[in-house]
Image 1: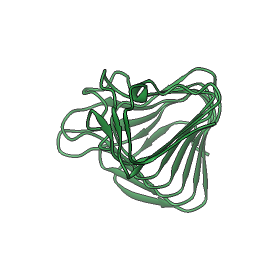
Image 2: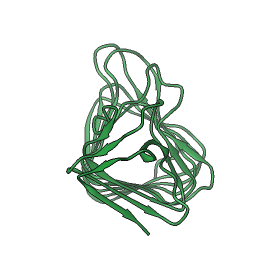
Image 3: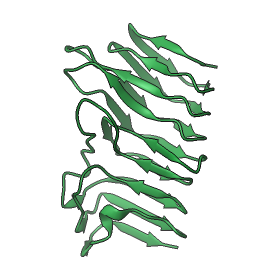
Image 4: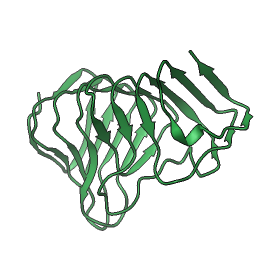
Length: 193
């Protein structure tokens, strides 16, 4: 289990289970690259911090499962230059915590983001605003987005009027996903239950 400290200096590939526990910050340095093919359980309110140093930035390639069991954040905490990257080919899920989990750097999501508790917000105190390549403004072009009795909040004031063929949205119960409130064209998958 990882309770705090910094990983830096290369690529770390995981295929088993990693537990991030407690309130302490766990930091990925600017030259860290994580390739997750297993399961990471982010338990507690601690932050997984991403760093940039002017020439490189931390990256997390998730082809497996990353589960946030409380209100822990995924934040770009220091540095400038290239923006840290989360490439989500697998599944990122907020499974617990009634409060807010913030994410404040690039989130490339050809995979699945599932919000099952509290609020998952693309906002925070990063050196620049978070970005989502599948949400260039005015349309949601890809990824699977599931919100179940929870809240998903995209960055900025943009709203999507079009759900493109590569995108899938499922809203369950009292789900809130405000940036798609004005959908007028649905080419992808849209489910309300």
